[in-house]
Amino acid sequence: MVTTGAPLFVSSGDLIADRRYRWAIEQARAGDLAGAADILVQTVELAPAFATAWFALGAIRDALGDRAGAVAAFAAAGEADVEDYHGARLHLARLGAGPLTPAMTETYVRRLFEHHAPGFDAAMLEHLDYRAPALLCEAVQRCPAAPLRLGTMLDLGCGTGLAGAAFRPLVDWLVGVDLSPAMVEEARRKGVYDRLVVGELTRFLRDEAAGAAAYHLVLAADVFVYCADLRPIAAAAARALAPGGLFAFTVETHAGTGVLLRDTLRYAHAAAEVREALQHAGLRPLALDCASTRTEKGEPVDGLVVVAAGR
Image 1 (cartoon, helix red, strand yellow):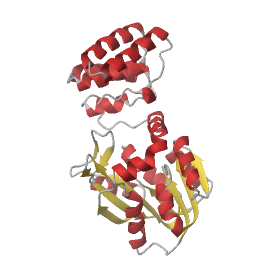
Image 2 (cartoon, helix red, strand yellow; image 1 turned 60 degrees about the horizontal axis):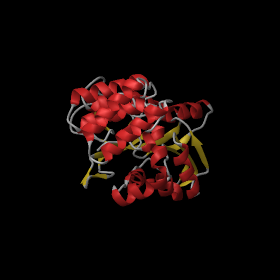
Image 3 (spheres, rainbow, N blue to C red; image 1 turned 120 degrees about the vertical axis):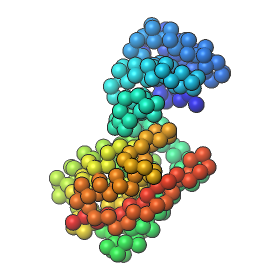
Image 4 (cartoon, rainbow, N blue to C red; image 1 turned 30 degrees about the vertical axis):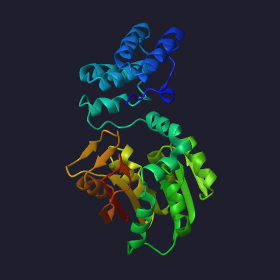
C-alpha cells in the first residue's frame, strides 16, 4: 500500500513541485504506479530537498518491487528531513538497509498519533480486538505485591485513555502523559484522569523522579512497540516508583533473540530482552506472561504482559 496521503504531506516551498507531487499521488491512487514514480523523479529533480516527494517515491518503488530504488529514495528522504517526520529510517530498516533497530523520532511518533487520534478507539476496539488494558488490569491484580487499591498511578503513553478508564476504579490519583496533544485531548474528554500532560515519556519520568514524585504503579499499555531499547525507559520508570511500587507493561514479542522491527513498523522484544531491561533497571519481574493484546489482519499478535516490582 502506498502511504503518501495528506497527513504525510509537507510542502517543498515550490508551488510547481507541490503540484507535481499531488499529480503523482493522483496517478498512484488511479493505479498507475510507474507513471507516478516518473512524475516524482521529475519532482525531486525540481526540488531536491522535498522529503515528502522522496518518501512517496520510496513507497511507490517498494510497491513496484524496486528495492534498490526504494532504498535510494528513502535514504534521500531521511537526508532531507533529519527529524524523520515520514519514518523513512524505519522503512530503510524494514528493507535491510542501515541500522536494523533505529530509534523512532519524537516527530514521527507524534505525527503518527496526531493523525489517528479522532478514530483511535474505534479502530483499536472494533477492528484490532485491542485488550491490553484488561490484560494488564488482571495481571496487576493477580500479583501478591499489589494492594487492593492503588494510591497513585502513572499511565505512560496514555493515548485516548483506554488504560486509564480500565484502572480508574482501582486508583485514587491517576496521571496520564502522552507525546501527542490530540491523543491527550481525547483522553481529557473521558474525564478519568486527575492530571494530563503532553510530553516525552522518559523526560517526564525523570522530571517526576527529580521532583520526588513516587507512583505505586507505572503502566504502559501497547507503548513500547515504538521503543527499540527498553532500558532507558525502564530505568526512568524505576526511579519514579514508590518503594515496592509496580511497573506493568505490554510488548509484542518473537521467538528469537533481541529486538525485531516488524513489517508493521512496530518493535517486537524477545522475552530475554525484556528481562535484561528489567534487570538493568533494578526491577524484579513478578509476571512475564504470553498473551496477545491485539490482532493484525485477523491473526493474534504474539505479546507479553509484564509486571515488575521496584526496590
